[in-house]
Image (tube, rainbow, N blue to C red):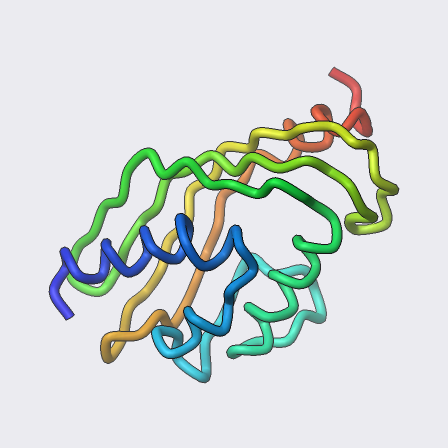
Amino acid sequence: MSIEESKQLLRRFYEEWFPTGDVEAALPHVDGAFVNHASPPGSPQGHDNLRAIATMLAAAFDEQRYDVHRVLGDDGHVVVHCTWHATHTGEFMGIPATGRRIAVDQAHVFRITNDKIAEHWAVRDDLTMLRQMGIAPG
């Protein structure tokens, strides 16, 4: 897979599959031994990781959307800089629904191996998310 094809794959992941919860459509592009370094402790890995994360987010947030600002790639890695928008409508990590809209800046790093997503790391502004939800001061 070329660098450009890898970048397009990750753009589709954030614009088409993940916000709609259609993770099954993404799984052919994800290695069965996928490792998500940004998952909560005790989370499953592999395809079950993506299913669990998508289920958790769908239960807690409506109107999910990712604005993809830039996608950068080199040999074997792709970085996605985006803003995640959603409405907090269900329990999330023990926090009851607040009904508030959130917009959270994020950067995601992916390792691509054998034309599949093999690993993921994330840098998210979780403090701002908690502030927007009314949970943290500020």
